[in-house]
Each structure stands twice: as structure tokens, then as C-alpha cells.
Length: 245
Image (tube, rainbow, N blue to C red; front, side, top):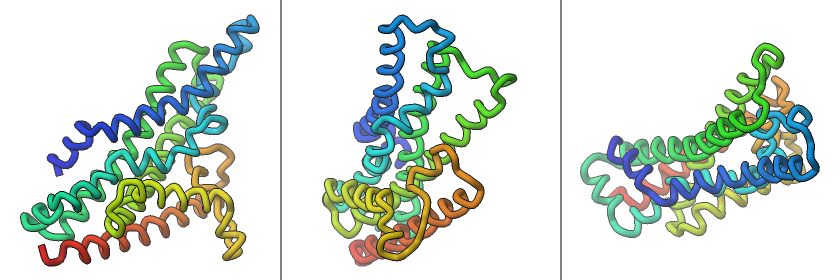
């Protein structure tokens, strides 16, 4: 497991996922800040650090590229391991179940870290530039940062397993992040309601605002189903390809 985790931080894909997450968040906040400067808006009337920190999620491109970043952070390495024969070699040293567990855990960790660390860095920067959130005046500030980061990490981890399942059945890097993105966009377009009559929250709802307790439970249940199906598909795909290793 330690070796797998080390490979995460040596991978260009992980840092690419981190950079894209950060830049999509910065795209909104930086343009908003520069616009305020250009019109001569005084500091006290500009957006607060909290608003700038989370604004990129709601109004920038972060949500659109979220499944891509979650998939590419580490899950696409499954394709390399299957094509090179490295997966078979690792299974020979242990078992298919152990291999699946380590790969899934590492991919989930990488996806969560790439997205949440980008969000955290972005928030730290703006809290050093703009007017920071006063915990005494705005008690919801720090809990909001924590809730957004937790929801973001959880969601990214599940999409990473979906990417692994795709890679196990179709060892192609393009497919490994395209299929999770396709599912994400169908979900975003309320495909479940159109075809199945199921009204489920947006896939980004766990790190968005205005989530009621009922919608929170529905979102967690939806992600639980996606995780269970994806993990089962990943296990079956690896068993099919590696059972004779």
C-alpha cells in the first residue's frame, strides 16, 4: 500500500488533476477580484474571502471538470498496469482481492486529495488577500469550509472507483475518464427523473450549498449505490482479467 501511495505523488496525472482543480476555482475568484479593482471598489465592498473561496465551485468550471479530475488523479494508472502486465505480477504476489483493495483505496485517496487540497490552497490564498471570514460574526464560515471539503473528497473518491471499473472492463485511458464524466453529466441532466422517475440531488450537491437534511440523505444514498455498483464492477472486471495470474 505504501508503494502505491508513493506512486500517486510521483505521477504527473495527480499533479495535473490538482492543477486543473485549482485553476478552475481561481478562474472565477481572480476575475472577480480583478474586476473589483478595475472599477475602484473599496476593500470592504468586495467579495469576502469565503465568497471567493467557494464561488468558483458554483460559478466557475470546477463542477464540469470534477469527474475528470477525480478519474485522472490515479485511477487511469489501472490501464497502464493492465497493458504492461504489472497487474498480473502484483496479483502473483498476493491475490486479486488484495490488489483490488489497494488500488481502489489509493485511487480514492488520490482523487480526494487532488480536489480538496486544491480547494484548501485556494481558500488559504484568498483568506490572505481578501477580507477573511470573522468566526465570531459569521459562525458558519469555518464549518462551511469543512463541509465543502468533506463532501468534495467523498464525491471524488466514489468517481475514482467508477473510473477504475471502467478501466478494468475497457483498458483505455480515454474511456477511463470519459465514462465517469458521461454518467456525471447524465446525472446532472436529471436523467434518472426523466427515465426512472427518481428525483435525486445533483452529483455536486455534497459540496454545494442549500443542502437540506433530506437531500443530504438522498445524495449519500445515491453515491452509496454508485459506489457499490462501481466496486462490484471493478472486482468482476479484475477477476475476469487476472484470475489466471
